Length: 248
Image (cartoon, rainbow, N blue to C red; front, side, top):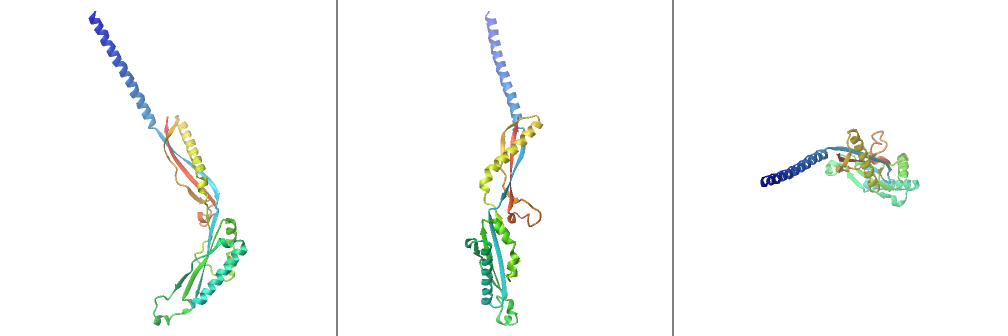
């Protein structure tokens, strides 16, 4: 009788051990499957774009003059600057929009000795460079008036060779950032869901996400001039969100 009881006791112990082993085995198998599944990921990108219009224009009208007498040359430059101010105010700009640029004077014969200067033509000795800067939120006015530069040339004003026209700035990026990031994230999620569907899986949680950098480009790039974002009134803002999802 005692022998039978011992056998039952040992049987119970072994059954308990076996049950624990089965349970642990199931846990490790299940955990292994989970970990294997969680290692499956997909990385997708979502693009968001928005057309915007510049809200600020900065326009530098640069001029120069060449002469042999510095005083006479400066008077000519002063007259040209006054003529430009009149041209701009007549076009609709207010005084607060207009600012004179710094004056730069170059002496072609700087460093020459008196003997060397005697052999030089003094007519073009001095070069004065200066101009006027316009800063306005009326970008359409700046655009329209900047196309009339020939009127200043016909008045005898020499526009410098490095004249590149107005630049146009968009200052409202912070106002649209959040909405664009949300849109880019939605587009990335939609791409991930489509991939999961095609792979006969389900989209899981986000493993990692990268917002990307906002870029501003010309909306209508047709040539080297219009491709320059700084010279485009109509611009396109872009951002790409890169997201890695787990697959279930």
